[in-house]
Length: 76
Image 1 (cartoon, rainbow, N blue to C red):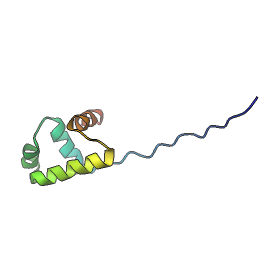
Image 2 (spheres, helix red, strand yellow):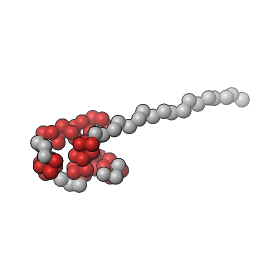
Image 3 (cartoon, rainbow, N blue to C red):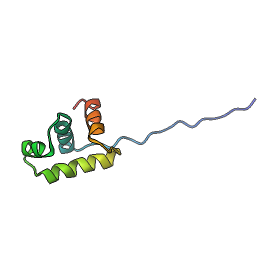
Image 4 (cartoon, rainbow, N blue to C red):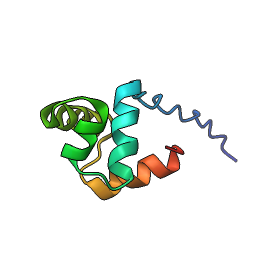
């Protein structure tokens, strides 16, 4: 009989999104375009794009569909 000791898996904490990143994600998940989101938030579309690139990099997301799924799961 052998005894195996398993070490518990510790997952890295999920990266947190800044409030403006969350707001941007909420607009995109609602079906707004980058330009519509930018106008609503008082930003340029390039800033909206930068926020979304940052979100994708933090969370390892590649598509808008994945962003939308994330927003829904976060209750945004």
